[in-house]
Amino acid sequence: MTDGSLVPLIESLYENFTPVERLIADFFIKDRCQGEDFSAERVANSLHVSNASLTRFSKKCGYAGYREFIFDYKESTHHKNTLSQELTKRVLDDYSELLYKTYQLVDEEQMNRIIQLFVKAKRVYIYGKGSSGLVAEEMKFRFMRLGLICEAITDSDMMRMNNALLDEDTLLIGISVSGKTKAVIQSLEMAHLKKASTLLLTANNDLSFMEFCDEILLIAVKSTLSQGNIISPQFPILIMTDIFYAYFLDQNRSEKERIFTSTLKALEK
Image (tube, rainbow, N blue to C red):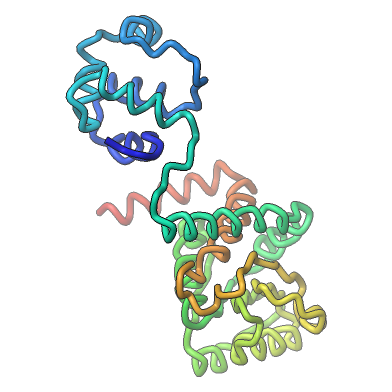
């Protein structure tokens, strides 16, 4: 049925499974050994489910029965790259490269320093234009869910007006992959003069940024990233955002989870 791993398929169907089927799904989502015995009898006994449950699970995954499902599953665990389309492989290779580069760039001590900027700030403004503006909006939404008072600004004129409100209780986050977005860079310079905390997310390791940025968070980049012709320019920024979001969440975690749950309930009304 499929040339790739069945795990993404199983995960996409997870919400539609019964509790018993989710138990089975969890078994197959977990990394399994290639030589493992996947016979219906062995799996059913291991999970304390019936053979009929395995059959129903397999059918929900689009197979005629468990035997057909497990044949494809065992094939997928060989970890062979069976992608036939060169374009598909190229895009996925690019994403893998960006993930690897991000791993190399992450500095845990810097992450802790960045979180302290968040903790001490009474207000957070996030500036970005174009694709960086989309990330700014996403960042605002996510951090608001944890109780942070923040605003995303994506218009140059609004940035200039908002700069008048910056003070020592403010954290200004500027997002510019190229490091050449004039409105963003100038706003960070202004924020520094007004004693606001400043954080720049960029792929441009320009030493001059250190004159007005408390922290420069480097993001992974490919030569064609800024054009967005294959890889979404937001991707490496979102990875870094997820990382320091996780660090921020871990500070007073129980209280932030309470706020998150409260905002979730508000959205469901």
